[in-house]
Image (tube, rainbow, N blue to C red):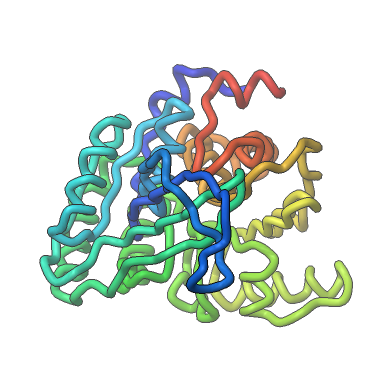
Length: 310
């Protein structure tokens, strides 16, 4: 058990691709005469912060402190994102690129089902990303843990340099990875891929023994302290120098897995920033992920919710 007071002192620097999650809810009464698709009559709209911003929101919801370092456009979505972030208690550090389209994921929901998702995005310029490193170095001493939230949108081009700076400063570095090249994450404390993401990098495994060997080889190759594999209904497994630690998934009705990975790594970072070891923090992060999948859309977990389950 960790107290609210301990957690309140934990300061997490979240770096990565921030975005807006837009939800359009509506009634579906008929099929379109133009094509075999449902006609959705929109009755309600909702906007939530997504990507790295949702990760930072999860840190704050737990009662810890979070700064968000990200690159956005100079468009309507970026200003909306900034106002949404300002209402959460996150400290925003936004780099702006007028040529960038701030990422928006628009989900159309009818009859409690997601019917389609529309993504609006492009890639930031390298000059804006380079200036991010300067901001990162200024923010680093004020934080206890660094969390890189990679959504593959181009915002973490200089992640290798930032990891090296953080480790030299003695800060734990947690990474939610993306893509098939994990060499850019070399030297991190822990990476948290799901099954599909890890298979993309190390290939399929046919047994737990083969998985063990593949994760050991990857940890050695990248110089990682640990790898946390999130395994959906099978729970999660931490592979480190001591061996492995497994926790089962929390038995509950799964309503929506959107953002569950954000909650897991945010909880992990907040607890590690407060002084817990990865091994002590992991069961709590697993519990937080179990709570959030029982909620609709990108959601968060509070300190009281997390420890009411303990």
